[in-house]
Length: 149
Image (cartoon, rainbow, N blue to C red; front, side, top):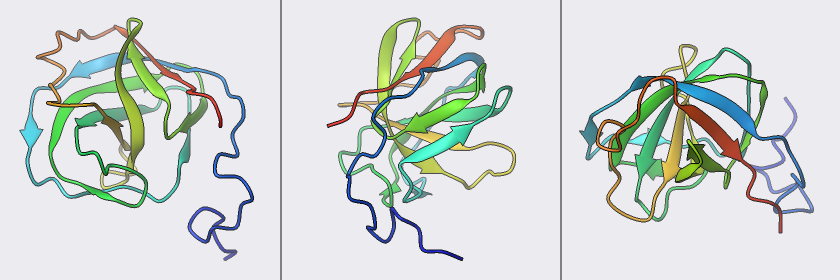
């Protein structure tokens, strides 16, 4: 197998993605739970392809070190969402629900694959559950590119 360009530092750009489409979705299940010692192992990869009709889980954390290759413990469960159009998610994307930014994409955990991927979103403080935020099934979700440096 060839070496991974991110893990092995083979790229000449810290951010190779310069433009991408917004990835749309919709909430299919609102969650209401927390964990203090979840031990989510974030993948070292900054991007993931998602396919139309896939369902993935959205999880919030306020841990400042949450990033690719790190472990995240203190979390709040937000929701499951269905991908409406295939696309690329990238660490740093803003995750919007009904036009409101609910977090910045910090990384991905694969503990539930092939059923679904955990998508971890960073918030500045005190993550709330989807229920506490008043989310509803059917609400629109968007992953919006933050831009490149």
